[in-house]
Image 1 (spheres, helix red, strand yellow):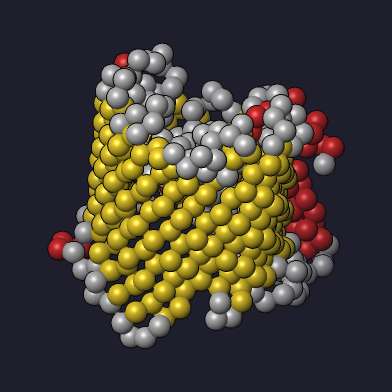
Image 2 (spheres, rainbow, N blue to C red):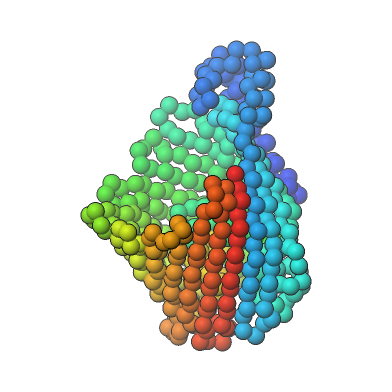
Length: 438
């Protein structure tokens, strides 16, 4: 752990490289054992390496026999918030990645990313100085998006893997830890992660040490971190997945007001009631306090309950209630590493929880069997404060998606928020995406 803390003072690129190098060295020791005649489990079929030449050739094959991935997303987004000028962003995001083949449990991945705006001064990207316009948080950037190595440690009865470097991390429903995949520049963690099942069927456990958070604002606003993530889940037959989590977030000096300690439980499952009806359910409860250098002294609670009834040939009808609590209206429950766009409406009014907290009562509908194989999602939200229950406003969200080919898809998303309180102004967002990937 002291090696990781020392790396906090190194240049940004050195951190993921250092983590990858440490993990590669650890995995290389297993390859050495194989070379010396000790069998090592290998998903590719190799159990022993007989000569140095064979070892070198196997490594070369693993590197050259990997897979290339490409994801190109063209986006046109319009946004208008009362009191600001409207914004129109035309951006294209290109990601090019390469994953090596497996070699004695060792794999690596590198991904480059570029976000280009066709008219940078027509919208407020948060980085281009157009502060009089409505925010569309898709700034231009060219960067190393991911660089990691993973190693599946060869144990007979226990699944155990280590992954180090700059990596996408999505846990559970992404309410606490997520990659914000909606944005052109997603959120990635520079971390060392350990996953295991302790040899128990149905159990999964994760620990991650996070030493940098690369956020969605290009290189601006990244978090220097000394954070710990613990997530343990167990599949309970005929009930669902029960998850316990502890997230100790320490953002050293960069954003201390987001430092917190969160302890929670989550249950999610689905039951087929009969040939016509099914029921999906999820519920979460969590408690949060300030942590380390947070200047605020607070505690707050989080609750979620969501029920969705599936009806054959009709679709899914759901209702939910989510609460991010407040401590006497002074400070509220926060989830700074979440995929925030996924929650509390697509107009993005509650990315930072108001000091009064927020309660979100919502209903949604996913119709089935629409013409031309279109998928749709419609939701209505009613937002109010947690401390005094004043109504913030209401929102209507509509999403349409269509798969054009195996590699090409199109999306349209509309969000309209109608505000009732100062600071929660009427906001409209309309987005069209065209995505090509392989």
